[in-house]
Image 1 (cartoon, rainbow, N blue to C red):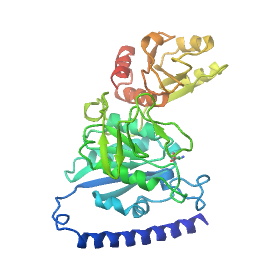
Image 2: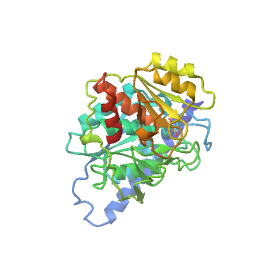
Image 3: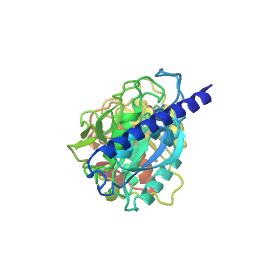
Image 4: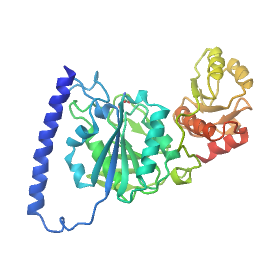
Length: 363
Ligand code: ASP
């Protein structure tokens, strides 16, 4: 049933595309010659990975759909306006629910972008992605890409078949940012619901709203309106060309487990996770705190343990730490702290406590 619906949707999108392409041509022939004489616009490469933006469900409905069902090409048929912004090349990297994202896909994405970025015709990149783990992929790429060119992640909260699907406008705005001079050298960005976010500080903060992304107390860094990019801030922490993490040649990353503390949380989980991981991140209560029972076990661990918080806003400094053998995540969320720890361990498996502490102050 769903297969037929995808075919039907693809046909509808193709017809819409042909009609608007025809309209665009009409406008072009009646307009001034300046448009025809315009300089080459450069290319934006779209790397599609799946998510709700490529989701298909019952017509009109916003829940109960299959994410990662439509290809990049079909998504593009729905937004012909994108062709007015840049020449587009689409690459289907994978087509998954972003909860099935893996380190292997991250490494493939980083390798592809790093290779293609050398092409002088390419102005920037858009990665379409599920919103659930968008913040993790964005931060990973922010630390591992070796380019100044804009790399912009986007997605959607409503599948392509929903009433008022939010994917097409998000995709259009992401391409506008990826093609813009303003976004050069800003590290990896996320464009969602007209706003521009830095990879390090954004996260998913709503399970349902189309305003699903925010950056807590630091806020967004810009706005897009009718294709015009307004950037107000620049991320300060090290990223892309200034980052020391080089993942070329790697085919996997060390394993880091994230453990969430709550009242009466079983300390045996810590022991188990430590035995099966190269490092741990604790999502502590408040400023990275946990029970006496957890303190006792963590004090005896010999693998790196990074302390973050289950609270969205705020900072954890070395002075907050309950155990001397742990490292403060600063303002990184537990899931982003895990990425920095994985990269640090990939670079230097026996990294010292002091060097790890330094990294969490720099990135
Ligand atoms: N579960 C979906 C995903 O992350 C949700 C979304 O894209 O909004 O792929």
